[in-house]
Length: 371
Image (cartoon, rainbow, N blue to C red; front, side):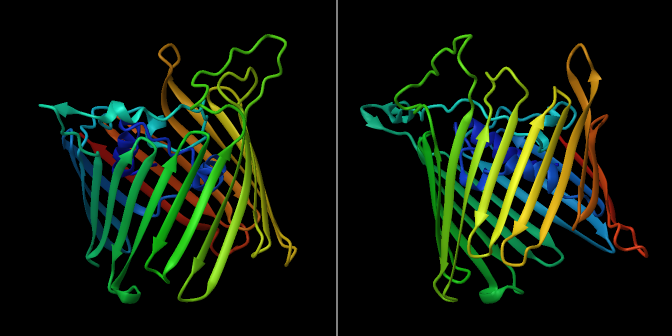
Protein backbone atom coordinates (compact mmCIF):
# COMPACT_ATOMS: atom_id res chain seq x y z
CA UNK A 1 0.00 0.00 0.00
CA UNK A 2 1.23 3.46 -0.84
CA UNK A 3 2.36 5.70 1.96
CA UNK A 4 0.45 8.91 2.58
CA UNK A 5 3.30 10.98 1.17
CA UNK A 6 3.34 8.92 -2.03
CA UNK A 7 -0.42 9.48 -2.25
CA UNK A 8 0.08 13.25 -1.95
CA UNK A 9 2.83 13.18 -4.57
CA UNK A 10 0.48 11.40 -7.01
CA UNK A 11 -2.13 14.06 -6.24
CA UNK A 12 0.44 16.72 -7.19
CA UNK A 13 1.06 14.91 -10.49
CA UNK A 14 -2.66 14.90 -11.27
CA UNK A 15 -3.05 18.57 -10.32
CA UNK A 16 -0.18 19.57 -12.63
CA UNK A 17 -1.16 17.19 -15.48
CA UNK A 18 2.01 15.10 -15.27
CA UNK A 19 1.80 11.47 -16.44
CA UNK A 20 4.29 9.27 -14.53
CA UNK A 21 3.26 6.21 -16.58
CA UNK A 22 4.77 7.71 -19.74
CA UNK A 23 8.29 6.95 -18.55
CA UNK A 24 10.74 4.15 -19.16
CA UNK A 25 11.17 3.60 -15.43
CA UNK A 26 7.50 2.50 -15.27
CA UNK A 27 7.63 0.26 -18.34
CA UNK A 28 7.05 -2.88 -16.23
CA UNK A 29 4.95 -1.22 -13.49
CA UNK A 30 2.06 -3.68 -13.88
CA UNK A 31 4.27 -6.75 -13.46
CA UNK A 32 6.10 -5.21 -10.51
CA UNK A 33 2.81 -4.42 -8.76
CA UNK A 34 1.51 -7.98 -9.18
CA UNK A 35 4.75 -9.93 -8.70
CA UNK A 36 7.12 -7.79 -6.60
CA UNK A 37 4.78 -6.27 -4.02
CA UNK A 38 6.41 -5.93 -0.58
CA UNK A 39 4.87 -7.65 2.43
CA UNK A 40 4.78 -5.91 5.83
CA UNK A 41 7.27 -6.93 8.51
CA UNK A 42 6.32 -6.61 12.15
CA UNK A 43 3.82 -3.98 13.29
CA UNK A 44 3.70 -0.47 11.84
CA UNK A 45 1.32 2.43 12.45
CA UNK A 46 1.04 5.60 10.34
CA UNK A 47 -0.90 8.73 11.31
CA UNK A 48 -1.15 11.45 8.66
CA UNK A 49 -2.99 14.67 8.03
CA UNK A 50 -3.37 17.32 5.37
CA UNK A 51 -3.53 20.31 7.71
CA UNK A 52 -4.07 22.73 4.81
CA UNK A 53 -4.48 22.10 1.07
CA UNK A 54 -0.76 22.88 0.75
CA UNK A 55 0.80 21.24 3.81
CA UNK A 56 0.78 17.63 4.98
CA UNK A 57 2.39 15.70 7.83
CA UNK A 58 2.88 12.03 8.58
CA UNK A 59 4.18 10.14 11.60
CA UNK A 60 5.03 6.45 11.69
CA UNK A 61 5.98 4.02 14.44
CA UNK A 62 7.12 0.44 13.85
CA UNK A 63 8.22 -2.49 15.97
CA UNK A 64 10.44 -5.12 14.39
CA UNK A 65 12.53 -6.21 17.32
CA UNK A 66 13.53 -2.56 17.77
CA UNK A 67 11.10 0.34 18.06
CA UNK A 68 11.74 3.02 15.45
CA UNK A 69 9.78 5.52 13.41
CA UNK A 70 9.84 8.55 11.16
CA UNK A 71 8.48 12.08 10.85
CA UNK A 72 7.55 13.46 7.41
CA UNK A 73 6.49 16.84 6.09
CA UNK A 74 5.31 17.87 2.62
CA UNK A 75 4.59 21.27 1.10
CA UNK A 76 2.99 21.96 -2.28
CA UNK A 77 2.77 25.41 -3.83
CA UNK A 78 -0.38 24.21 -5.58
CA UNK A 79 -3.42 23.41 -3.38
CA UNK A 80 -4.15 19.67 -3.39
CA UNK A 81 -7.95 19.50 -3.39
CA UNK A 82 -8.16 15.97 -4.80
CA UNK A 83 -7.04 14.33 -1.52
CA UNK A 84 -9.35 12.25 0.68
CA UNK A 85 -9.22 10.89 4.20
CA UNK A 86 -8.52 7.23 4.87
CA UNK A 87 -12.23 6.66 5.57
CA UNK A 88 -13.21 7.97 2.11
CA UNK A 89 -10.29 7.41 -0.24
CA UNK A 90 -10.70 5.11 -3.23
CA UNK A 91 -8.60 2.03 -2.50
CA UNK A 92 -7.38 2.01 -6.11
CA UNK A 93 -5.63 5.33 -5.39
CA UNK A 94 -3.58 3.94 -2.48
CA UNK A 95 -2.80 0.45 -3.80
CA UNK A 96 -0.76 -0.70 -6.78
CA UNK A 97 -2.08 -3.23 -9.28
CA UNK A 98 -2.85 -3.60 -12.95
CA UNK A 99 -2.09 -0.27 -14.67
CA UNK A 100 -4.69 0.52 -17.32
CA UNK A 101 -3.05 3.13 -19.54
CA UNK A 102 -5.22 5.71 -21.25
CA UNK A 103 -4.90 7.58 -24.52
CA UNK A 104 -1.89 9.83 -24.85
CA UNK A 105 -2.79 13.44 -24.14
CA UNK A 106 -1.05 16.48 -25.63
CA UNK A 107 0.95 18.72 -23.29
CA UNK A 108 -0.75 21.87 -22.06
CA UNK A 109 -0.19 25.00 -24.09
CA UNK A 110 2.47 27.00 -22.26
CA UNK A 111 0.38 30.13 -22.71
CA UNK A 112 -2.24 28.67 -20.37
CA UNK A 113 0.35 28.70 -17.57
CA UNK A 114 0.85 32.45 -17.86
CA UNK A 115 -0.70 34.75 -15.26
CA UNK A 116 -0.66 38.48 -16.01
CA UNK A 117 -1.35 41.34 -13.60
CA UNK A 118 -0.91 44.99 -14.41
CA UNK A 119 0.80 44.17 -17.70
CA UNK A 120 3.45 41.99 -16.02
CA UNK A 121 3.74 38.23 -15.68
CA UNK A 122 3.28 37.16 -12.07
CA UNK A 123 2.96 33.41 -12.49
CA UNK A 124 5.40 31.06 -10.81
CA UNK A 125 6.26 27.43 -11.26
CA UNK A 126 4.51 24.90 -9.05
CA UNK A 127 6.82 23.04 -6.71
CA UNK A 128 6.67 20.29 -4.10
CA UNK A 129 9.01 19.86 -1.12
CA UNK A 130 9.19 16.75 1.01
CA UNK A 131 11.35 15.76 3.97
CA UNK A 132 11.53 12.73 6.23
CA UNK A 133 13.63 11.97 9.32
CA UNK A 134 14.07 8.41 10.56
CA UNK A 135 14.37 7.87 14.29
CA UNK A 136 16.49 7.04 16.19
CA UNK A 137 19.12 6.88 13.39
CA UNK A 138 18.49 10.54 12.36
CA UNK A 139 18.69 9.60 8.68
CA UNK A 140 17.27 12.36 6.48
CA UNK A 141 15.51 12.10 3.12
CA UNK A 142 14.53 15.08 0.97
CA UNK A 143 12.74 15.70 -2.30
CA UNK A 144 12.41 18.87 -4.36
CA UNK A 145 10.07 18.73 -7.36
CA UNK A 146 9.46 21.67 -9.69
CA UNK A 147 7.36 21.92 -12.84
CA UNK A 148 9.42 24.07 -15.21
CA UNK A 149 7.11 23.88 -18.26
CA UNK A 150 4.11 21.77 -19.30
CA UNK A 151 6.62 19.32 -20.79
CA UNK A 152 9.43 19.61 -18.24
CA UNK A 153 9.90 18.65 -14.61
CA UNK A 154 13.00 19.04 -12.43
CA UNK A 155 13.59 16.67 -9.53
CA UNK A 156 16.25 16.55 -6.78
CA UNK A 157 16.42 13.80 -4.16
CA UNK A 158 18.90 13.52 -1.33
CA UNK A 159 19.79 11.24 1.57
CA UNK A 160 21.91 12.20 4.58
CA UNK A 161 23.25 9.29 6.60
CA UNK A 162 26.57 8.98 8.41
CA UNK A 163 26.78 5.31 7.41
CA UNK A 164 26.95 6.23 3.72
CA UNK A 165 30.10 7.21 1.90
CA UNK A 166 30.67 10.97 2.10
CA UNK A 167 27.79 11.15 4.56
CA UNK A 168 25.06 11.00 1.95
CA UNK A 169 24.13 11.29 -1.71
CA UNK A 170 22.21 13.66 -4.01
CA UNK A 171 20.60 12.89 -7.36
CA UNK A 172 19.33 15.50 -9.83
CA UNK A 173 17.02 14.60 -12.70
CA UNK A 174 15.52 16.56 -15.58
CA UNK A 175 12.39 14.96 -17.01
CA UNK A 176 10.63 15.71 -20.32
CA UNK A 177 7.25 14.40 -21.48
CA UNK A 178 5.97 15.34 -24.94
CA UNK A 179 3.33 12.61 -25.07
CA UNK A 180 4.78 10.91 -28.14
CA UNK A 181 8.06 10.41 -26.32
CA UNK A 182 9.64 11.11 -22.96
CA UNK A 183 13.21 11.47 -21.74
CA UNK A 184 15.09 11.73 -18.46
CA UNK A 185 18.66 12.85 -17.73
CA UNK A 186 20.20 12.31 -14.31
CA UNK A 187 23.34 12.86 -12.26
CA UNK A 188 24.12 11.28 -8.90
CA UNK A 189 26.96 12.12 -6.54
CA UNK A 190 27.20 8.40 -5.69
CA UNK A 191 30.12 7.45 -7.94
CA UNK A 192 29.54 10.54 -10.11
CA UNK A 193 26.89 8.61 -12.01
CA UNK A 194 25.42 10.09 -15.18
CA UNK A 195 22.58 8.53 -17.12
CA UNK A 196 19.77 8.97 -19.60
CA UNK A 197 16.64 7.03 -20.43
CA UNK A 198 13.81 7.49 -22.86
CA UNK A 199 10.53 6.02 -24.05
CA UNK A 200 8.99 6.27 -27.52
CA UNK A 201 5.33 5.50 -28.27
CA UNK A 202 4.50 4.33 -31.77
CA UNK A 203 1.32 5.46 -33.47
CA UNK A 204 -0.63 8.68 -33.00
CA UNK A 205 1.18 11.87 -31.98
CA UNK A 206 -1.09 13.69 -29.48
CA UNK A 207 0.52 17.03 -30.34
CA UNK A 208 -0.56 16.77 -33.99
CA UNK A 209 -3.74 14.75 -33.45
CA UNK A 210 -5.14 15.54 -29.97
CA UNK A 211 -8.24 13.35 -30.32
CA UNK A 212 -7.95 9.71 -31.43
CA UNK A 213 -9.82 8.93 -34.66
CA UNK A 214 -13.06 6.97 -34.27
CA UNK A 215 -12.69 3.24 -34.78
CA UNK A 216 -15.02 1.57 -37.28
CA UNK A 217 -16.71 -1.72 -36.46
CA UNK A 218 -14.66 -3.69 -38.99
CA UNK A 219 -11.32 -2.15 -37.96
CA UNK A 220 -8.98 -4.27 -35.89
CA UNK A 221 -8.67 -3.12 -32.31
CA UNK A 222 -5.12 -2.06 -31.51
CA UNK A 223 -3.27 -0.90 -28.45
CA UNK A 224 -0.08 1.02 -27.87
CA UNK A 225 3.39 -0.23 -28.68
CA UNK A 226 6.26 1.45 -26.80
CA UNK A 227 10.03 1.03 -26.89
CA UNK A 228 12.60 2.48 -24.52
CA UNK A 229 16.15 2.24 -23.23
CA UNK A 230 18.42 3.56 -20.50
CA UNK A 231 22.17 4.14 -20.28
CA UNK A 232 24.32 5.08 -17.31
CA UNK A 233 28.03 5.46 -16.56
CA UNK A 234 29.90 5.84 -13.28
CA UNK A 235 32.73 8.29 -13.78
CA UNK A 236 34.59 7.39 -10.58
CA UNK A 237 34.30 3.60 -10.72
CA UNK A 238 34.51 3.44 -14.54
CA UNK A 239 31.48 1.16 -14.82
CA UNK A 240 28.63 1.33 -17.33
CA UNK A 241 25.26 -0.28 -17.83
CA UNK A 242 22.26 -0.25 -20.09
CA UNK A 243 18.89 -1.87 -20.62
CA UNK A 244 16.21 -1.79 -23.28
CA UNK A 245 12.59 -2.83 -23.31
CA UNK A 246 9.39 -3.18 -25.30
CA UNK A 247 5.78 -2.91 -24.13
CA UNK A 248 2.44 -3.57 -25.75
CA UNK A 249 -0.73 -2.65 -23.89
CA UNK A 250 -4.36 -2.45 -24.91
CA UNK A 251 -6.21 0.86 -24.49
CA UNK A 252 -9.58 1.46 -22.78
CA UNK A 253 -11.38 1.36 -26.17
CA UNK A 254 -10.22 -2.22 -26.74
CA UNK A 255 -13.30 -4.51 -26.66
CA UNK A 256 -11.48 -7.45 -25.09
CA UNK A 257 -9.82 -7.93 -21.69
CA UNK A 258 -7.07 -5.37 -20.91
CA UNK A 259 -3.67 -6.92 -21.61
CA UNK A 260 -0.06 -5.80 -21.10
CA UNK A 261 3.06 -7.55 -22.41
CA UNK A 262 6.67 -6.48 -21.87
CA UNK A 263 10.11 -7.70 -22.89
CA UNK A 264 13.24 -6.24 -21.26
CA UNK A 265 16.91 -7.00 -21.89
CA UNK A 266 20.04 -6.07 -19.93
CA UNK A 267 22.87 -6.97 -22.36
CA UNK A 268 25.86 -6.52 -20.02
CA UNK A 269 24.30 -8.75 -17.34
CA UNK A 270 22.82 -11.14 -19.87
CA UNK A 271 19.37 -11.06 -18.29
CA UNK A 272 16.15 -11.35 -20.27
CA UNK A 273 12.68 -10.88 -18.78
CA UNK A 274 9.26 -11.38 -20.40
CA UNK A 275 5.94 -10.58 -18.69
CA UNK A 276 2.28 -11.07 -19.57
CA UNK A 277 -0.57 -9.54 -17.56
CA UNK A 278 -4.32 -9.60 -18.13
CA UNK A 279 -7.21 -8.01 -16.29
CA UNK A 280 -10.04 -10.56 -16.19
CA UNK A 281 -13.07 -8.43 -15.42
CA UNK A 282 -13.38 -5.72 -12.80
CA UNK A 283 -12.18 -7.73 -9.81
CA UNK A 284 -9.27 -9.92 -10.93
CA UNK A 285 -5.88 -9.56 -12.64
CA UNK A 286 -3.26 -12.18 -13.40
CA UNK A 287 0.42 -11.90 -14.34
CA UNK A 288 3.32 -14.16 -15.25
CA UNK A 289 7.02 -13.47 -15.72
CA UNK A 290 9.87 -15.55 -17.09
CA UNK A 291 13.46 -14.50 -16.30
CA UNK A 292 16.45 -16.01 -18.06
CA UNK A 293 20.19 -15.32 -17.88
CA UNK A 294 22.06 -15.98 -21.10
CA UNK A 295 25.43 -16.35 -19.33
CA UNK A 296 24.58 -18.65 -16.44
CA UNK A 297 21.50 -20.29 -18.03
CA UNK A 298 19.59 -19.71 -14.80
CA UNK A 299 15.87 -19.13 -15.11
CA UNK A 300 12.91 -18.26 -12.89
CA UNK A 301 9.14 -18.37 -13.37
CA UNK A 302 6.87 -16.11 -11.31
CA UNK A 303 3.07 -16.12 -11.16
CA UNK A 304 0.87 -13.57 -9.42
CA UNK A 305 -2.69 -12.34 -9.14
CA UNK A 306 -4.93 -9.83 -7.38
CA UNK A 307 -8.60 -10.30 -6.52
CA UNK A 308 -10.77 -7.42 -5.32
CA UNK A 309 -13.66 -7.88 -2.90
CA UNK A 310 -16.74 -5.74 -3.44
CA UNK A 311 -18.34 -3.99 -0.50
CA UNK A 312 -21.44 -2.81 -2.34
CA UNK A 313 -22.23 -4.32 -5.74
CA UNK A 314 -24.71 -1.60 -6.68
CA UNK A 315 -22.36 1.28 -5.82
CA UNK A 316 -19.28 -0.63 -7.08
CA UNK A 317 -17.43 0.04 -3.84
CA UNK A 318 -14.48 -2.17 -2.99
CA UNK A 319 -13.58 -3.32 0.52
CA UNK A 320 -10.12 -4.72 -0.19
CA UNK A 321 -7.80 -6.65 -2.45
CA UNK A 322 -6.01 -9.97 -2.00
CA UNK A 323 -2.64 -10.39 -3.71
CA UNK A 324 -0.68 -13.60 -4.09
CA UNK A 325 2.53 -14.54 -5.85
CA UNK A 326 4.69 -17.62 -6.22
CA UNK A 327 8.23 -17.85 -7.57
CA UNK A 328 10.89 -20.51 -7.85
CA UNK A 329 13.46 -18.30 -6.12
CA UNK A 330 11.53 -15.95 -3.80
CA UNK A 331 8.87 -18.39 -2.62
CA UNK A 332 5.28 -17.41 -1.84
CA UNK A 333 3.94 -13.98 -0.92
CA UNK A 334 0.46 -13.16 0.39
CA UNK A 335 -0.95 -9.69 0.98
CA UNK A 336 -4.39 -8.43 2.00
CA UNK A 337 -5.07 -4.69 1.75
CA UNK A 338 -8.30 -2.99 2.64
CA UNK A 339 -10.20 -0.66 4.91
CA UNK A 340 -11.70 -1.23 8.36
CA UNK A 341 -13.84 1.67 9.55
CA UNK A 342 -11.50 4.70 9.33
CA UNK A 343 -8.29 2.68 9.07
CA UNK A 344 -6.44 1.39 6.05
CA UNK A 345 -4.65 -1.87 6.70
CA UNK A 346 -2.11 -4.05 4.95
CA UNK A 347 -1.28 -7.50 6.29
CA UNK A 348 0.78 -10.22 4.70
CA UNK A 349 3.34 -12.98 4.98
CA UNK A 350 6.29 -14.37 3.07
CA UNK A 351 6.74 -18.16 2.80
CA UNK A 352 9.89 -19.98 1.69
CA UNK A 353 9.20 -23.63 0.88
CA UNK A 354 12.93 -24.37 0.53
CA UNK A 355 13.54 -23.81 4.23
CA UNK A 356 11.85 -26.56 6.19
CA UNK A 357 13.07 -25.15 9.51
CA UNK A 358 11.49 -21.72 8.92
CA UNK A 359 8.75 -21.74 6.30
CA UNK A 360 7.35 -18.34 7.26
CA UNK A 361 10.03 -15.71 6.68
CA UNK A 362 8.06 -12.64 7.69
CA UNK A 363 4.61 -11.70 8.96
CA UNK A 364 3.45 -8.12 9.35
CA UNK A 365 0.58 -5.71 9.82
CA UNK A 366 0.56 -2.05 8.78
CA UNK A 367 -2.16 0.45 9.72
CA UNK A 368 -2.75 3.89 8.23
CA UNK A 369 -5.02 6.70 9.40
CA UNK A 370 -5.32 10.06 7.68
CA UNK A 371 -7.58 13.04 8.28
